[in-house]
Length: 473
Ligand code: GLY
Ligand code: MN
Ligand code: MN
Image 1 (cartoon, rainbow, N blue to C red):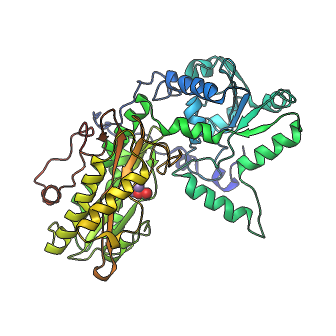
Image 2: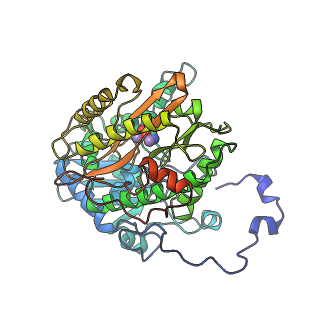
Image 3: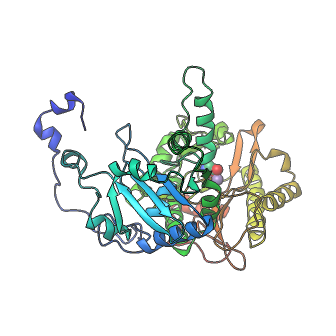
């Protein structure tokens, strides 16, 4: 792998960095807790049994044929590599340029990894390559050089059904809604026209293998599996929500009239980073005053004014799972009468909607409950978005929106009231998991009672201690 020549000309001490100085910080027990403690850096924090279970469940759901998936390719920027959600879900592997095959009849997996590359390792550090270590880390015994993938594919000619995902991959802070829009624009651009990577893979398979091999879409089957979370996934989401809530408390406490919106995002981001999140689940949305009305406002360059509200919608990713949390608070730490009135109406709508999250309910049913609650306080006309969506590995997670909830389904509950003539936007959003009898609010420890928010901002209340608050709110 070539690096820019200029970089190689830098003086050696600059390239080498200055090395650790002084004593390292004391370990903290608030770091992200692995679901299964890792013994080796390449172990999955959810444990290899989780990924093995997902492969078996997928093989069973598909029924007949061969599953083929390509992992994310290496980055085209100097950002950390992040595996695509589907590939990580099925393998726990974070190596760029990998591929996976599963024979459904016995759920036998073959993992294809790039061969060890000493030059790359000099720059990036060690990575998984075909061999014993990869088999131990993943529990997949058959690990081959990715150079053999082409031949493996060609041998599938005439051997029945082939499944691969036709949906766009989700990598850094990606959800399918955003990625699909991007791909539609690019493929219909008269001066570009590139299809998505998955569409290109499908076309290549069809061309190589001919009519005797039918290539089918894996994504609806995979989406249904991902819609219902296992206990390991719920634990990861609980951890993301805990860290997200702590970030919101830090952001509330960093807020003063005169500060910039980006400073508030930075206060939360510092907490996410310190507690072990590798990156945000989506861009930080922090809007003061008129910017509180823009649903996905991400510029953050306004100076916060006295008497305004600050709306922050921001959550971390932890172990490939996301938290989606919004809180709204008064810039100067004290609600005005009007702000409190609007805020309390939104909070009531959120509480009523949370109470409706249970097995058998649906996304549409929650939207009806929110609208009814907002209508009761006279604010139904001030909604600008639906009050819920699935959440999981992607912040807007996959799954059929018509399906009734069952235990393990995770959704957000996020009513909003937006009053343009008052430059006042209020949204309150939590990440919750459906349980046997209702739901657990995973981000429920993040303050949202209006008095609790004032207390937190005045430094009177301790930061939330940890997990969600058990069943219900
Ligand atoms: N954070 C984006 C959303 O709430 O849907
Ligand atoms: Mn949301
Ligand atoms: Mn949100």
